Amino acid sequence: MSEITSITPQVKDKTRCNVYLDGRFYCGLKFETVVKNRLKVGMNVSEKFMNEIQLDSEKSAALEKTFVFITTSAKTEKQIRDYLYKKGYLPAVVNYVLDKMRDYRYVDDLDYAQSYVGNVGARKGKRLIKMELFKKGISKENIENALETLQEDDQESAAIGILNKYMRSKEPTRENIAKAYRYLMSKGFDYDTAKKAIEQFGSLDEEREYE
Image (tube, rainbow, N blue to C red; front, side, top):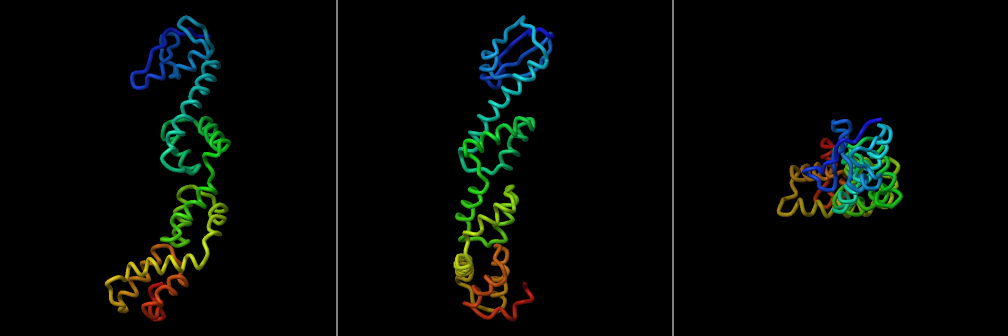
């Protein structure tokens, strides 16, 4: 058993305090955790007890920070996990927060992927969308399910719209058509989709060297 020798407010966060056992700093806790567990100077406590309430305190703090983190925009599970690890939280705390986020339906990777596809499908090809969603931590299954809503006609329309803007004020020369094709490919469109869009300005047959 150890004795609580001091409980002092933290300088940078007035909602938290530092707890000292036997004259040495032991951990930081939220004030509400201190009050909830009736901690006070002179009280004898075990390290097991202190570890349990510290974990409980960290869960509460991490959950609050995550709610603030997701207020600006929707986040994936990976983005939340990376954010919490960067803040220094332990895996047990991170897993607890993610479980709560799922329970509250504040995080849903499939819903995120579907919304993302809906938002960028008019200006990006499937290959690029897949890559971007993968980097955000979306599973292959969720990516494929989300992309099912993106029809070939939608991709062709998107490619044509992008191409028309790119070719504005440009002559449909062999060189410009080749550059336009490469531009569409860089946007994630496949060969067939890019080819159909390019055919408005000229034949792509002689441009296959750029595939």
